[in-house]
Image (cartoon, rainbow, N blue to C red; front, side, top):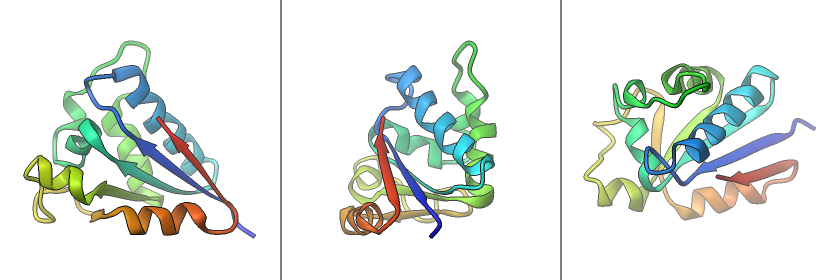
Amino acid sequence: MARTLVVKATAGSDAPERCAQAFTVAATAVASGVNVSLWLTGESSWFALPGRADEFELPHSAPLAELLHVILSSGQVTVCTQCAARRGIGEEDVLPGVRIAGAAVFVEEIMADGTQALVY
């Protein structure tokens, strides 16, 4: 059975190290052949918009835009429905391949057999 990793990023530029850790772990897992689902919640929701990941900087960290590209290439990226609504982010605003979904979808993903969930 293939294992799946669900990573929930709860921080953005407000907590850059925690944010970068979530993206780094998700991208590393994708590169390792793991099925990955990255959830963007809170301030990390902004990185679902074109160009926003390019603005993120953290010394000694891989560029967030590159990490996001790796994740989108073989994984799933989801923005929390409520987080998107609070920020005025709609389906038409997000990068290609990014979806907006709610808690029911998150719970379904993390409760599936063979799934490990991490929250940053």
